Length: 133
Image (cartoon, rainbow, N blue to C red; front, side, top):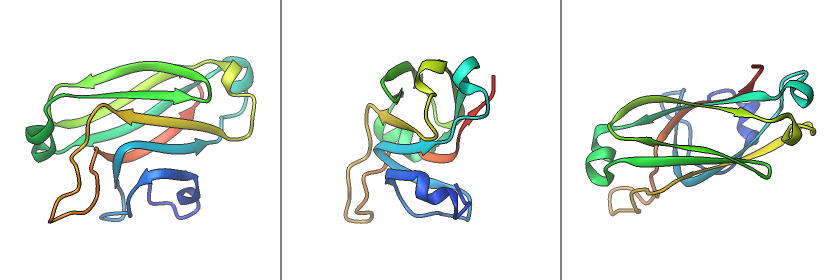
C-alpha cells in the first residue's frame, strides 16, 4: 500500500496513505493487479490483509467482504470481531489471461461520512496481491 509505483493500481475507493503503510477504504474499493507468471495456466491466490478497528466494529457489527475478479465472483467472508484478517481466495486461470486484472472488493456496510470525518469508512487495508499457488 505504501509503494508509490503501486498507488496507480488503486482505481477507486481508497483514501490517502496513513502511517506510511495502510489506507482506509470506502464500502467498495477497486484495484488492478498483475497476475504472477504462469497464472494463466495454474491460477493464482488473491491475498488481502484487512484490519477492522474496534470502534468500527462497535458501530457496524460483523462485516462481510466479497470480491469479484474480472467476471468471477469469489466466496465472501464475514468478520465477526474487530482485528486483523487475511482474505485468501483461489482465482481460476480463466480470468488471469491479461496483464492487468480488475478486482472489485465490496463490504456489506461502511460508516457514513460524519462531521469529524467526511469519508465513508469501510476497513483498513495493508496489502493486496495476486500470488502463485
